[in-house]
Length: 346
Image 1 (cartoon, one colour):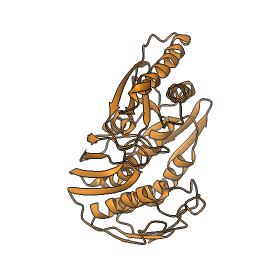
Image 2 (cartoon, rainbow, N blue to C red):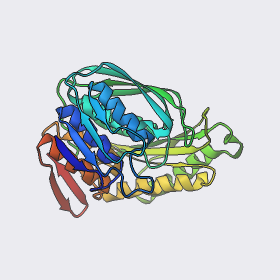
Image 3 (cartoon, rainbow, N blue to C red):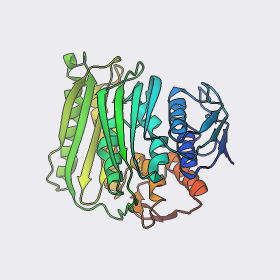
Image 4 (cartoon, helix red, strand yellow):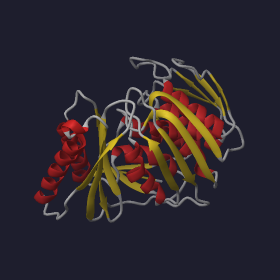
């Protein structure tokens, strides 16, 4: 059994998600202590429980201590995996984060898996929205041989959630390396601006889209790049009001993205500007992956020798992902700093 201190590194739910996924992948029992102990609401929350119970169900494993607010958990993975499973998420726990450990656990299953998800949020703060997964993370994993599709019948915003979707995961028989040493020429800049019904009265989705498009167009023009951003606007029937913008730049070798969610307290125009600024920061850095997608793909990179990416800076989430992946898979990433970023390879 591997014992982990949940307060180390980033100290958040990422320890639970990545560790449980890797535990199921390697069939290694784990104990996690001090779970989110330094957070204002310490212990496991609804979205953490949903992900844990989902990955335990996937590998027919056993959980101890899986209760709201629990700061300690034991997980004993099983030796078989299911083809279909169902996850229920209370309130607006992120469906993206609940899905993460299952994706990691499935990486060596060499089968097709169907995951039904009821409840939760497709767009919540402090988590990648499903638009980010579909248009950035999953397309990077496609380079490694995975095929992951989301079929969303209802979106969900904080605080009510209420999302409904299915994830279809096809795992390759052999995982290919994710080798992106350089970004290459940028071809497109795209995005999706979503808002709940009721917010069309003040053009929330359009204002986010316009604000981001104008900022990105100005950015590209100042660098003599002839690209006109294409950001679509959409209104969704949801149980709570909110809005979310995801934008990404596609180049010869990679996709780099940024996203942000807002509610009535936030100006849509500011959300658009913030997403543009974050995307510009990643593009100016010379990175081949943004920080969010790098954090998500690192465990998969470790399963395919010859992988290499470049990030702008080391974040707490990336450090946690690296440390846990190395511990469970008994390998070491090679990390090299240079003038325009940090290269991570294996």
